[in-house]
Image 1 (tube, one colour):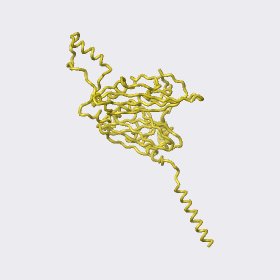
Image 2 (cartoon, chains in turn purple, yellow):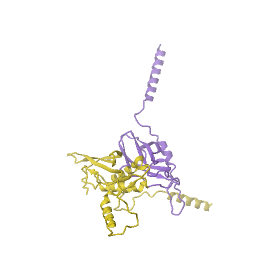
Image 3 (cartoon, helix red, strand yellow):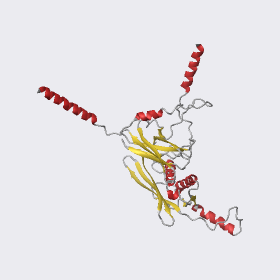
Image 4 (spheres, helix red, strand yellow):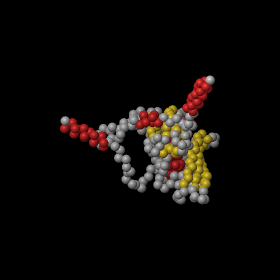
Length: 159
Length: 206
């Protein structure tokens, strides 16, 4: 009988433990490994003038967090682009504040043509207020229409 | 062996050079108008003007009635109906001028811009031509100045709050833009730009 009671107690504690394991912290899931993987695509700038630049292109059609202050605080959940009714390109990116503190960040977008040359002036900085552990959406539209093929979003902390 | 070692050392030292010289540049009085400057307060500042006009310009180009019409509409963008009811002292032309210039450069024929702010200048020249004081110029004479299909209007409003204990001040500023059909009064496009700033610095805007 004692053995049965002990076994039941053991099972109860195991199930309680399992219940604890299922409890999740109320936080956004910030997969920083994804950002780290993206960073490896960006090589060092050229060291000497006149030599072929070892600078690899920063990945297009992506969001680059260019500010050390927020690089490990933000998580870019998604970035997509779509054509508007007038043929311009609209970039939409969902950005998550992984910290327990409010963050003010700003983003801007450079649109590129088929040859990956800038097709228009870079957009103005657009502010994004991020409450602790929340997400917000950054969106920007291009000026050009058919000539716009690629884009790159930069994100930094608002000063 | 010695050569190999020398080459290895040279390669190592070269690779060591490949670092960013992460230092501040030469000091200058010039500032980036698109970023927060050295003097900052709670009012509308250059980075707000640059950012809001860029946003409105790009947003207007997504409205088919403005940017994808069968015939390019005649648009008037000036500060005549752009009202400042806020506590911020600002020249409204700095917003509407930048918006008009950037929109015209960006639209590339998708919209036609009418210079109503230069209507008197045009009227005076037309009169001189028709009275024979001057010749007719190279362009053909027009029956009349062009009428507008759409005109920009807007309003700047604000809400101030001050903490008398700390001297901290905050201001919420809201700027709305509306493009109105000049025949039907339909609002065919609207945009809003808002921000709230708090500061203890005593900044005077001129």
